[in-house]
Amino acid sequence: VAFCLLSLFARAQDGLKRCLSEFRKDLAWVERLDMTNGPAPDIVAKAEGRQPGQESSEVNVEDDFQREMFFYRQAQATVLEALPRLHSLKMLTKRPEDYFAEMAKSDQHMQKVRKTLLIKQAAMEKSEKAKQLRALRKYGKKVRRQ
Image 1 (cartoon, rainbow, N blue to C red):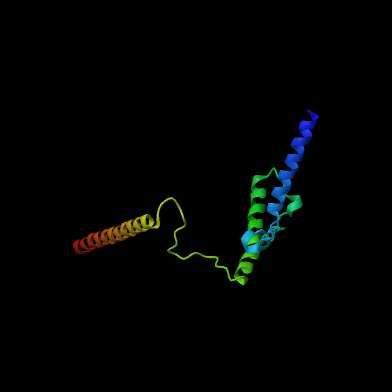
Image 2: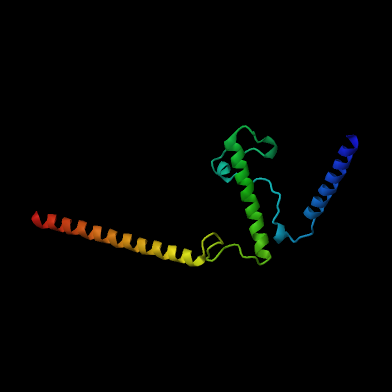
């Protein structure tokens, strides 16, 4: 039994070492996009004249709101640092307006959906204009009666 456990442990170690070598691949930062940041400054607290929020070591993990705000500010700090870095590498950070992400439905179908939505929107605008004209006519009749 002890031999089996040692053998199993040795195989597990080999597997872990293989996985570790996969993680340690020397990829460019653009391929990894990994960053380690502290939270962004609490601008709202500064503007209101309060003490800025607590730092990472002082976050109360039992307070859901405080913890979520810490994550939010940390994400803000990461974005503020990553965007200029991506721009310096001449990477695009915004998609074209007519870009549809790869999904279960084809681009052709999404174009049809978009066309339908635009038609509905135009019909709603036309309907609103007609309502406004009717309201103006009613108001005009009311004024003429007086």
